[in-house]
Image (cartoon, rainbow, N blue to C red; front, side, top):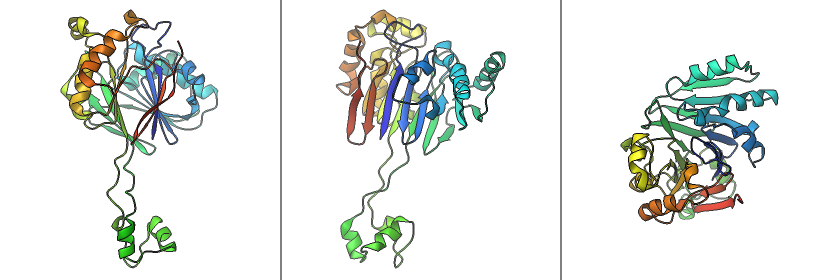
Amino acid sequence: MMDILFLGTGASVPSRDRGLPCVAVRSGPEVVLFDCGEGTQRQLMVSPFSLMKVSAVLVTHLHGDHFYGLPGLMQTMGLMGRKDPLTVCGPEGFSDALDMVNRVCGGEFDYKVDSRDLSPGDRVPIGNLEAEAFATVHGVPSLGYRLSEPPSRGKIDAQKAKGYGITGPEFSELEKGGTVRGIRLEDITGPPHPGLSVVYTGDTRPCRSIVEASKGADAIIHESTYSSAEAAMAEERFHSTAAEAARDALEAGCRYLFLVHLSGRFGKDTGPVENDARAVFGDNLRIPSDMCQYRLSRTGLTEIRRRSW
């Protein structure tokens, strides 16, 4: 199970209704942030997620609306007594930029910071999760990320267990990793269930690498700064239209599509974006507002917290 909390769903200029980009994903004890725009730490403080529980921050690129909130978040964690290590990742040049800002601002931490510059294909373990970086197209060094849970054990096949004569306490022995008369747990279980996965694109043109990295993902969180009527502007500025985002999601076979990085030009009327994307992707589309929270499971998607305008 994964909880997805949209802390900031706006584009490069914040509005009264939408903050700068940041999405939090929680799986078990791990909380991972995709991007960290200004205001992220305040959003976390009024959210059901704890900023002190954040395990990693994955930055897509160094434009200010995706990055400027990270130094302040890190300093607040230090002032609040954080001791747990923090993983922070981004594209080429990320670690030097973060180090420079922290030195200028006097950021000193009593906790370990594992700062990494990533390339497409790099994988980062985050507790029981794994993040994989992929290439995006935004005119500057940029990455998207696929965050995945590990596979879970298949269901015990009662008929197989009976055939091997496995009974009572012997199941406990198998659960501990032992064997019973040469039988292992995997001998009486079905195939493992794949873990859930969420893809986050950051700012990008639609591209083949997004489709390949998102194959079979349970959810893709794709930027959609422009409507189809503004396609020329989207191409010029290295962004995507809602319809282009929907085509990426459809071709990749994603279960659910979330559209973010919405321009303030639309205000509260997301109709043009929604209509464009729904015509391509269908009904498994969501356009979250700030502080909306969804629970993703193998059986479906549930909205568990809605922002009231």
